[in-house]
Image 1 (cartoon, helix red, strand yellow):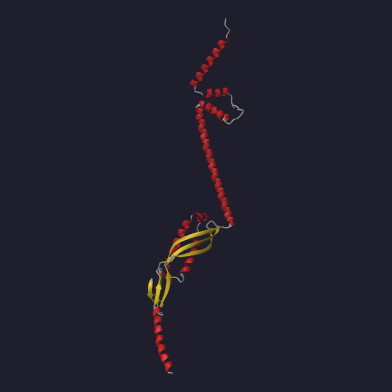
Image 2: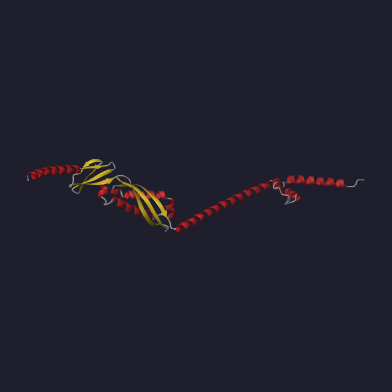
Length: 283
């Protein structure tokens, strides 16, 4: 009986010491460099502590840990109808972090879920105001617009949205084929415009060349001889002259200046008189 009383008397102090030590150890919490602790005293906000070793009194104080690192959140695919009535599926990713732990815990129940839902609705709202071509070509501008809207709306939650990236814009098969036909038609149109421009430029050059040849009659003869040289260089066995040289001389005489015409006429008359004298009988 005495041994039982002694054992009971020793057990009580050991139990009390153990409880005191357990209570003392429970006062201390360690917060990492990227963590903060929002402290509530009897349900009321007291302060934000951390990082490092902090003291939290059990029962009368509660602590909520908040991670300050950047969160990468994948926004689920959203069905969006563009301004030109094209149905697409769009998904995105957002980058944000908590800048004010007090607001992130007190002003919103679950800031992660709230940010995700807000990102989905904002994505549908912003993209619905643009046409499909803008979604495909001006993606950087859309990212900036969505980021600015999300950052402004989450400021009251102590959250900073640093970046938004639209990952995919998915179209149905019919729309993909329609876009391919449109691109092909655009390429055909550009080719025809370039061809027509080349034809116009070539015709202009031909008109200029014809005008210069009309002012220089001898140039036509040179061009004629050049053409004959090119034909001979092709190793043809037979060369056909398109016009007789006598006819070409007549054309040259018509196009020649008046002084040149008179000189040619006098020389021709002189040659004819000389031939008549040669033919006259001698007495």
